Amino acid sequence: MNQISCARSTYRLSVLISLIIWMVIPLITARAQTTLIVAPEGAYRTIEAALRDAHNGDVIEVHGGVYPAPLLIEKSVTLIGVDQPVIDGRGIGSLVLINAPGVVFQGFVVRGSGQSLPHEDTGIVIQAPQVTVADNLLEDVLFGIYFADAAQGTAKNNVVRGKPLEESIRGDSIRVWYSNDVSLIGNEITHGRDILIWYANNIVIRQNHIHHNRYGLHFMYNKNAVVEDNRIEENAVGAYMMYSAGLTLSRNQIIHNRGASGYGIALKDMDQVRVFENTFIGNAVAIFLDNSPSLYDSHNYFSHNFIAYNDIGLTGLPSVKRNVFQHNTFLENYQQVSVQGRGNLLGNAWSQDGIGNYWSNYVGYDRDGDGVGDMPYRAEKLFESISDNNPVLRLFTFSPASQAIDFAAAAFPSLRPDPKIIDEAPLMKYSIPVQIDSPGQGTTLSSLAGTGLLLGIGALVCFFGLRSRLQSSAKRIVNIAATTSKTEQKVPLT
Image (cartoon, rainbow, N blue to C red; front, top):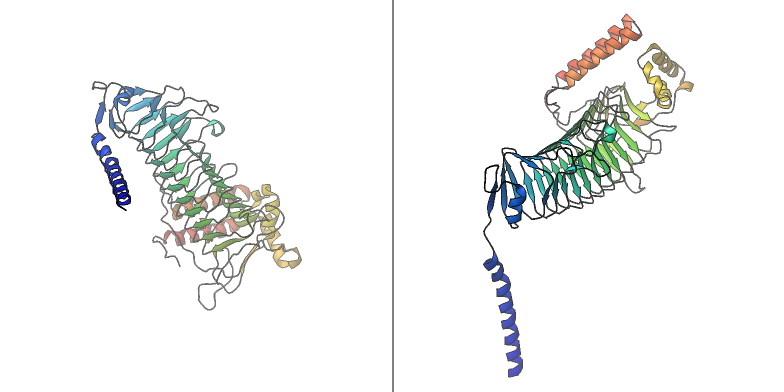
């Protein structure tokens, strides 16, 4: 027994000594954080010299000046730019390559990458986890910021301006590839190709201004992304989301995306999507649906979105089913709903629990005053059905020909097409989910209505010269403008 007790005591003592050594050695070997200064007339004249002497955890403070690229960072340090030091590539290759975890790169101007698409010449390439790139200006770069197998990274408050090239030969402003848990917050992204999120999960895209690109956002093979409070405008396509699941798209302003496709957002093979409290204004098509959701046990939900003054509010393939629409506002779109192909969109729910959507061209009534129309809303205009199959005929929208066709269908029910959608509980009032503003342009609902007034009048005068129709159409648009201009406060969501 004494031998057993002695052995136990020896074992406990050895464990205790090992624990003490494990706790004390890091304290003994730890060194204080050091700040190294790089300046044209400082102790370190180049960033590379400071990196050679730096240890993990050190801070390198780089003062104003022009420093050559490429800059290779292979230690876990913090680089802080003072007075906007410039990393200049002079048109050759990639500029900043970060290969160490935990690096902070902040306050620099990064400019002049190469122009090779095969080599993916990039402003900042990140190939390690937990890297933060913040408060930088990237200009004249082919690709902007590239997270390549670099999880838990952050790009915050950067400005990324691409090279002045045609859209097809630009690089991606931001690319996230095989990099989970990346956050893109408060950036301005312009004159690039796409913000491409590819094989990456749990991405957060918040409070960015994304404009004058090809695709504002381009998703493929992702899960559980959150896209909120962004302004996405003046792109060929606002956001094209493909082959992904669990997307939340909320409180974004998606405005005037009018390229060859011109979608505000497009969802292809997207499952378990929630789209709510977004504003869609002035797009060629506000929302496009293609095989979304793709799984039979999946539903997508659209609620409290403000969809106004677009050419088409929503379009989808006739095979699209299991989307739920409730509390959305469809206000003065040239065409509220379109179907690409023969068929309809009746496989989707256009109301739920006795609450549907607001349609500005609804001609029903609300006898009991409960805010819900007593007659269903039906999208069944003959001219719209014809122009869905022959889009070139939209040139004659609002013309006597289109009105004659719709009058004939109303007078002779045998000519009336099958409805594209039926909303059993249309709302009588619309609501605006977010404050609508436009930095530098002052776009408001009333100004858009005024623009619509001028364009409508001009089109009618040029093409038809019908004064009586002009007066009635102008009066109608003026009434819309007066109504929307009075809507200054956010309407509470129900």
